[in-house]
Amino acid sequence: MGGLNDSVVTEFVLLALSCSWEKKFFLILICFLLYLGVIVGNVFILFLVIFDSHLHSPMYFLLANLSLIDVGLSSTTVPKIITDLLYEYTLISFKSCMTQICFIHIIGGVEMVLLIAMAFDRCTAICKPLHYLNIMNPKICILFVITGWVTGVIHAMSQFLFVMNLPFCGPNKVDSFYCDFPKIIKLACTNGAKLEFIVTANSGFMSMGTFILLILSYSFILVTVWKRSSGDLSKAFVTLSSHIIVVFLFFTPCMFLYVWPSPPPSLDKNLFIVDFAITPVLNPTIYTLRNKDIKVAIKRLCKKISYSRFC
Image 1 (spheres, rainbow, N blue to C red):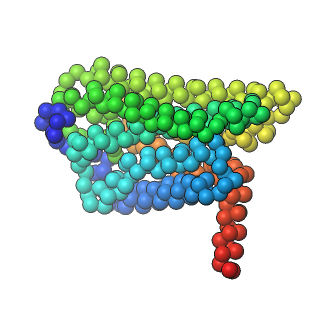
Image 2: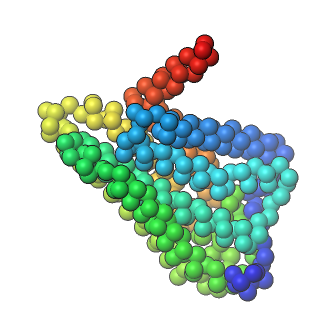
């Protein structure tokens, strides 16, 4: 096992990858198109933010980091699923499984902190507009990103240290497309009830706690705008709708997977597609369609491209 533990099991079987050729073809096509959308959409947002000086502001700095994280989150699972389906390979080594789990939880932790940072950014911009640039200065923005990575690593390692020393001596079949802590713990040759509770409490509490904090934050912003605008919430809804949609898209699968200890396999597989493919591909679309600055930046880019062609 190369120092990870003394388990007999050296690989796991991902049962969700065992299916008919028709279903495999459908899954390959869907995963490929969604992953292509994730890469193109998020890299495009990243490109716009970096090269358009009008987007050099705290909100778009955080948005660019969110796009980068979305690419990373999708890349932890989707490319491997596509290749495994193509080559009819349903096995994943113990080390690869543990590595995949760690990256999923590290990147997931980073994304949660970034979503909190974006909520704080909108709260500051709407509630304290005169002090916005002083509060959301470059140091604070970078600190948010560093805090995200530190939180993600601590979150993942705190669970990994429990799981890495578990004895795996018999069952090695996982009814899923990918590895995750709750699924792997159930295969351990020991009473994993306590460890399953720790993992569920860790990821479940983090997901639920962050979701509630974000909903309270956006509710506070809406109430503040309502009081200042004599009941007119339309402007606030236009500004915050994209953020709220992204929050629900990201946290709904997380809460089902980690707050609910044993979701049905069929639900787990569907939530996987939502969490690792659909949400990352929708994020740039949502922010683009609902954001005036991004639309203007795209128009400027198109004008530059048109001008360079004629020149």
